[in-house]
Amino acid sequence: QLQLQESGPGLVEPSETLSLTCTVSGGSIATSGYFWGWFRRPPGKGLEWIGSIYYTGGPYYNPSLHSPVTVSVDTSRNQFSLKLNSVTAADAGLYYCARQRGYTPSGYMEVWGKGTTVSVSS
Amino acid sequence: QSLLTQPPSMSAAPGQRVAISCSGSSSNIGNNDASWYQHLPGSAPKLLIYDNNKRPSGIPDRFSGSKSGTSATLGITGLQTGDEADYYCATWDSSLTTVVFGGGTTLTVL
Image (cartoon, rainbow over all chains, first blue to last red; front, side, top):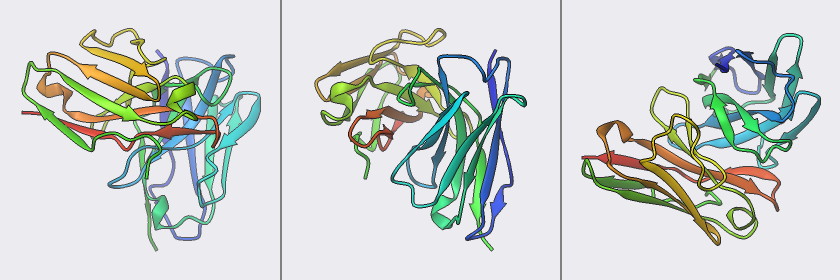
């Protein structure tokens, strides 16, 4: 059974870089027909897409994000990662990784990680 | 403000039926498939409906989905207290080239 697990620091200082990793188990990240995405849920708000990537590369990002973002994939480790630069308080919240079905980032999210909480504070 | 509009909250008694609406536009729901997710506090979001009306294996047939024009609807019958959660619709917006979510609907079963 495919499982995704987010990991990373729970606390980041303002203007610093948030780095999270999603480890995939029970299946290979290098499988055709799936995108791998990052999502978040700020306190008191709804879900938001951050960005997604195929195992061969070529990430797609939410153009409305105010912080520079990078999503990368490491097939040797069966992981994909998120880097959010110059974070502000608005970047705090629950962060989730998920597998999306399809050959484009428009696919539905069929498997999710349990999420990790990120706080932004000095 | 979300591109997809959902009622912020709904409530119904156990055993009853609810229909959660998700209103969009031609650039999103009107030309792309909708999916629905259940999100309980402290848990991972769960896919309930994909491709407008398909249920993943393991999702009971109490949950159903439909789409008409630029709106999608999630139906839940035989409500149970365990159905209390936040429900989100989602789709792709072809103009913005982004995944978009509704603002979420908090369902209370009382």
